Image 1: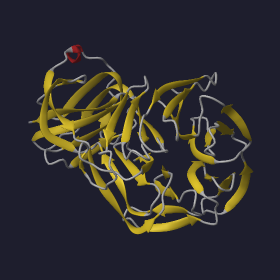
Image 2 (image 1 turned 120 degrees about the vertical axis):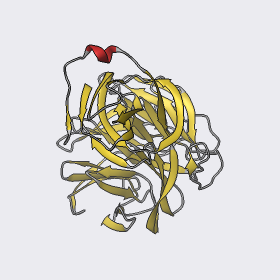
Image 3 (image 1 turned 135 degrees about the vertical axis):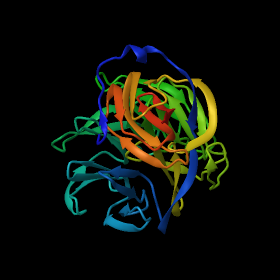
Image 4 (image 1 turned 90 degrees about the horizontal axis):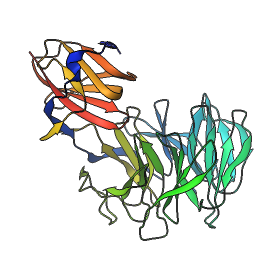
Length: 377
């Protein structure tokens, strides 16, 4: 927070909610080109490094650099599906090896953890506990836990878990798991282990879903066979987020983009981009869904962000009914001028004079993104 100062005092003037036109976030899709053609399953950004697991018929964990170059982090693995780190140790699930291999920061093997058959996708909670799904395409279901001492135990099993795959922790703290073969999205209460089916994705083909990713109040689920990416609310409402339903490879507006067997999903560290990997075939690209692009189309709206003054001569007070997590400032061309992260407060004072004219302030709330515009005099 280089230039920002938290503004804790509530100003009476901020209680007014101004009807403002605002510039919407235009969700667009484009390619991140790779310098090699590679197999991809689970994809992760861990401490700023982009990792790729080759999948059930591969043996490597790869690293992708910002320029698209590909290097090998570890090899000699047996069907690596996913990678997770806890401190300076990296955990790789090996689907054909029926183990989780622990690596150091150079990719050397530290230990091998014996687990049940079909270890796949993982997620880690705030305490460092790793949850691991198991799928052997038999209609069974199991999620294991790996504790801080690398001890493996069964967490939950049995119906309604059927061929579980994608897993993440929602904003409400519950686990959410997607079934490869039934399309069911299961909520698991981590305190009680109670399991509830909240939604069922209906799609053609055997593989209804792939990976699952929580973002804000939504879950994003890749449709392996349908070529869609779905958005599922924590209440179980399903919508087709993007994709044509036909195998393809095209960018552009979110409504026009095409995917071929979308599978792995990962968010950029700022949460504004989602990378998508392709399953079943090697590819020389990752597709990127970008929430950070500003549209020039104005939409009449009443902003939930309260602000004062506007126009401004160098200071803007912001207040919201929910936590402001971060914000970014853009000029009219869409150029990023400034970023403030880890705000985590319901109010914020922006104390910096930007060039005269209009700027867009993109605000990340728990419930999603909102954009307001401010004129600097």
